[in-house]
Length: 464
Image (cartoon, rainbow, N blue to C red):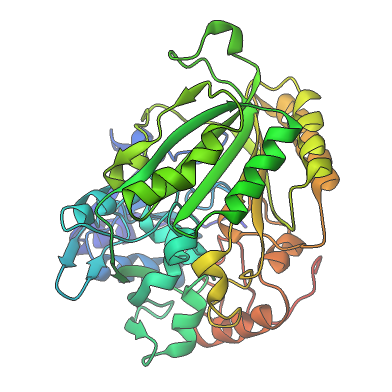
């Protein structure tokens, strides 16, 4: 859909009303302001509204609604589908909204959506408290919260949405709603996993969990089918205090790895044991003896240190397929190794996250994240360089995912990269989809918020 040209008078009016900043293509800050984390998205919005508060958000929503301009909402800019930017429309940029109020006594925090996971986690750690987000410190908490949030505390404390107590939301009609289990309960249900389909969340209230330090960090092992299968078996049998992310991938040119290992297949695992140090060391010891480690950085550490430093100039272009698996047995591990060996992409990976624990004890219909019984989340990905290379890498990803597919045909909306309605239905199966459609019709009947993995305002079958 193509957005109409906005009138200069509308730009002038909005500029005078905003408490934040309005960036247009003639602004020196425009080129930087339109960039997002992922490469491969060279889009040029007409306006970038850098909101300062909920009132600014309501003004931007009103302009989009009244003018017919397409609207994209950005928190940290990490949408793998590029939904946080747009050609020709309005980007509502929440990154300047970074307020955080931690109440250590009640173990709750009010946080604005422009905060990154790293910023929130560092501030909460000053009180020996934490809320679980994802595995990257620069991700904005707005997007990851609305998607569900699968990170380093998923087995101990569940998804991010399992710690969400309340939210402030600007709806399509510009109303600012306070939403929780008692106020607008259906909207509160939908926000927890339903993405940005129902409004713009301008504040979140999270539950904080006691967490002084973890035992964790990076563990690099040589990859083989046997080691991959054994790693996953250990992760499934481990205490739920331990959450792991195993990246079976090509070894990058890390300074601490010998040059002869660069380009070889390894397991780059991120480990986090949220509990007693000695118990954590005992739980991690079997992983460290699966094979002679190529690097072992596992140790007691403050929780925020689990987020590795990031290069702000890093903008990878990748094709990804997200899925859930029932198990990683020897056969599945051999499939993973064979597919990775069959590609020559400089960066290619099968990421495996064992789930269960606290996440699985929440009833499947309590939130819009319906995959509570899924055993393993997998992401198959390849970097690409240019359009022709993208097609080659996409074909490889598709073949890999098909070879790995098991009985669990779900998908995690936070990692979806395309607009295929069938994949969105996989993220929201059965009655979850039906209820989301009803909530959408109530709070966004004209589908103003559609630049996302969209829930339509009426029941549609995939392909319609």
